Length: 359
Ligand code: ATP
Ligand code: MG
Image 1 (cartoon, rainbow, N blue to C red):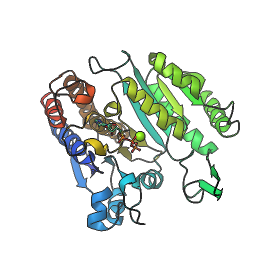
Image 2: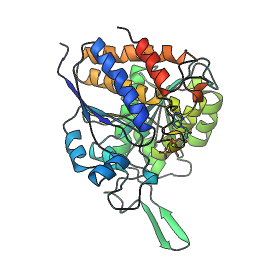
Image 3: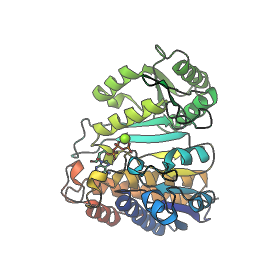
Image 4: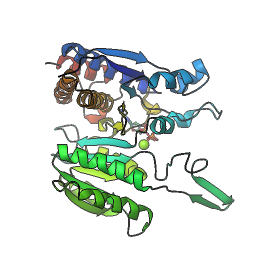
């Protein structure tokens, strides 16, 4: 039986272009929810630079307390590098990912006609481990994981655990099963024999549980080359944190740039966080020209995921309608933004998606 319980969703604009692309995404999701009779309770919450001004903290305790009660939230990009150097001006990202155990960052790459993609027919998903690697859990490694024992030497610690590798690999195998049943694990165990070696061991062990999924094992430098030359040969890709960070920007570059790079952060709990791959793009903020596609698509992924996890058929249908509407809007040169060969702006793209929303 389908659930009709209201979905409790947070709205966290973030910084810079976040104030433009998050409201656009919310407008579209609201309209899609209404179309499919999905009840959504929306909760706007302070975060980032504006929260520092109003609440004295970039991640106010009130925000954290409300997040605990939600099904999911839309997180706009955070411009933490521009924050003043005061203790309460922390980067909220790692705290959110850790607190809610959002260890898998699911980042799809898909090509569309006429928007400046380098290849046609690209449809792959990179699953980036989110909480370990060179950006480790602060509880495991003191400070940021970097040390400078003398003024001339710096050490960076990369944390790879069996449990962390296994859980992200499992998320990727499950995703592969829902798609073309092909999983590529990307690593460098030829050099990082212990750390990448452990990641690969866990991927291989799990492969035995998924005999229906074809697996490929590719060294990261080879993968970077093959991604440029032959991106159609990949379906789901799983990799460690920093490789995933770099490769998902490379993948975005294949299909029109960062404005085309959505993401969903999930874990083994029951919350999901919609978060585009790109940053807060301060260079174009306030001009109304940011491409909202990645944020809208991240939002769509969240509703679809919640639809499946809550047996809420309306939310799944919402996702399907949003997907058709964004595809139609991308085909409209006058509606889409300049970064993807359009003559429009954030508002015209949003209007085009709204106009194309149908049951
Ligand atoms: P971070 O460290 O947070 O990932 P970054 O240094 O990678 O940030 P971004 O803010 O992601 O930088 O963006 C790099 C550039 O890409 C921006 O300066 C902007 O010109 C462009 N860009 C990013 N997102 C968008 C978008 N949604 N629409 C249009 N252009 C964008
Ligand atoms: Mg970046």
